[in-house]
Length: 312
Image (cartoon, rainbow, N blue to C red; front, side, top):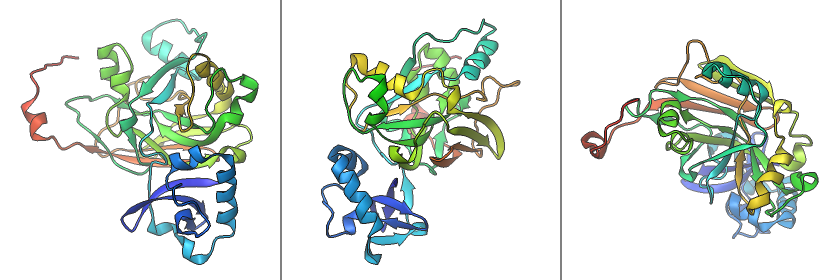
């Protein structure tokens, strides 16, 4: 199934994309209307997922609306926890980072994990508002996102993919100057709106091998990243197994699995996103998102400041 969260007639709905139409299960008399969001659907479990698949295939006209009449938002508008992210998980991205730092190429021995704040999540086609006075080095990172469907601790790598609900596309937009200034990833990764996600979630049954998916990004129509998930250093099953060793993964958790080479900071000369730019990210069989960069309007509080000064 291709699952979405959308706005229709001023309300937010869980939906299933069916070509040029969208099935809204909460309009169906046989649907449990308490399951009215993506997180509620994930929590409900496999029997409910099967029921949704059945109803979507047999749905009546009044339960469907034209695709053009809905507006997509992030499939999980507000995750319960921070988005878990992997750094340097593609061989060529490690190489371009080492070249930028003039260091020897050394592949990580274990996954490099950080998080993006839950409230950084943005819609798949929403604007990303930035303030170049805060960061003038906003970068793009196309990534395959994994949505956990069945939680657990100490998950065996051989069973790890059974815990996946589905897959989505994420752009891990990053303030490189803040990342460098604070000497850790969290702040530079967590700017508001800098985690566009979508366009929906493709359920795991439709992706037989997540290590065989193309991944690309464009800025203003120019191809910037062009790779596939077979180049991941740590595959999705291994990542799930490692993450679950010391903490319990929960249903609805979001994992961004790293970006391939072609990001802005490693280019010669470096390239960064500015107001007016349009950035697109695509993962084969999963979908494509597209976001325009706009200038953030500064509030009165922004203008007055908080007494802090920064030098980069």
